[in-house]
Image (cartoon, rainbow, N blue to C red; front, side, top):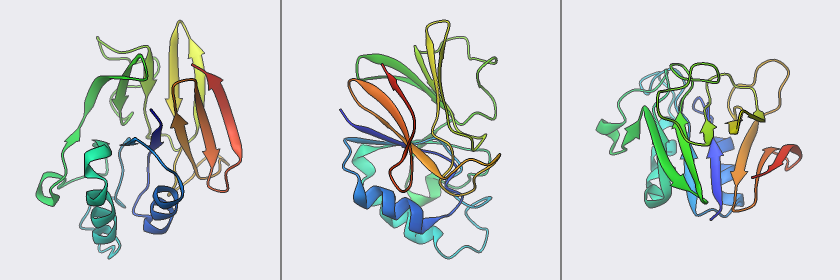
Length: 170
């Protein structure tokens, strides 16, 4: 199964649309901060983002970020923390403002995915793979806008122009 993972979009409709339209995927995970500091931030593109996500709603797993509000009012279901089976692994999904590497929840999978820092990360420590796809909307610490792909064999973090930042066999 090919899983597309994004985080910290912060209302950048053009970038999320580009990625979703150019990459085929079986599941789409968004690790929070979909909107630019709350849905009602006067950003007219928020409705476009909702319409785009509703088209792939059956493939979507949405995590609530610290800047996200009103998902239920928009017809989208969001989780704060969830552990699910994906590609023969137990994968924990969270935004990263409450749980992160060093502050794991009591139960977590062998893969721990989070956003929040806006910096792409892919590393393995103590038999746990830590993944942060970075941000497609607002980069930090000199990083490029990025997202991740998780398939049956590997995890890859890429820039928007398809350059591989990090890659790991899983």
